[in-house]
Image: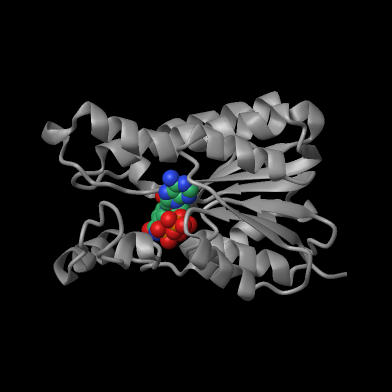
Length: 249
Ligand SMILES: NC(=O)c1ccc[n+]([C@@H]2O[C@H](COP(=O)([O-])OP(=O)(O)OC[C@H]3O[C@@H](n4cnc5c(N)ncnc54)[C@H](OP(=O)(O)O)[C@@H]3O)[C@@H](O)[C@H]2O)c1
C-alpha cells in the first residue's frame, strides 16, 4: 500500500503561487490529489500549475484581503477534502512604531483571512466530513525576534483558533492542525522586493543558526508534513501545533 496516497482528495491551497504553498501543491499532486490553487499573482499561479502532476487541477487568482474576491473564490470551489492556509506576510515593525494600519495589515492576511475563509468554506458546505485543515504558524510565537510583535501576535491568535476549530469540528471528523515552522528558504524571507522583507543579512543568519541549530528549512521540509496531515494516515491527529526546524524548550 502506498503511504499518504491522496488519490480522490480535492485540496484547496492558499498562497500556492510561492514558497511553501507552491511546494505543497506540487507534492500533493504527486501523491494523487486534485488541487484548487489560489494566490494573488496569476502568472506565478500558472507557474505552479505547470509543475503539477496529474490532471483536473484548477486555479483562481484572488486577493484574499478583499471580501468580494474571497466570496468569489468560495463560490468557485468544488467539494473539498482538505484546506491548506499558506497565504501570509511578515511586515516587521519595531514595537514603538506600531500604528493601527500596521496592525490591520498584519492581522488581516495572517489571522482574519484564514479564519474568515475557513468559516465561509464551512458555511458553504464545501468541506466533506473527514477533511483536514492545515494552518501555518511560526516558532516566533514562542521565540521573539526584533520587529516581530505583530506577525507573532497574529500567528499566536491563529494557533488558538486552530485548536478551538479542532474541538468544534470533531463530530464531523474534520481535523485542524497548525505547523510552527522555523526559518524556511522562500521568497517571504529572501526576496528583497517582498512586502516587509527584513533584509536578512549574513550576520543575522549566523545569529539565527546559533539559536536554531537544525538550520534553515526548505519548502519541501514543510510540504511533506502538510501532505501527511492531509492523508488518512494522520486521521488521529487534530488540535496539534507541530514545531518544525526547532527544538522548543
Ligand atoms: N518562510 C518562512 O520562514 C516561514 C516560517 C514560518 C511560517 N511561515 C508561514 O508560511 C506561510 C507561507 O510562507 P512562504 O514562506 O511560503 O511565503 P511566500 O513564498 O512569500 O508566499 C506567500 C504567499 O501568500 C500569498 N499572499 C500574500 N498576501 C496575499 C493576499 N492578500 N491574498 C492572497 N494571497 C496572498 C502570496 O501570493 P502572491 O505571491 O500571489 O502575492 C504567496 O503565494 C505563511 O503563512 C508564513 O507566515 C513561513
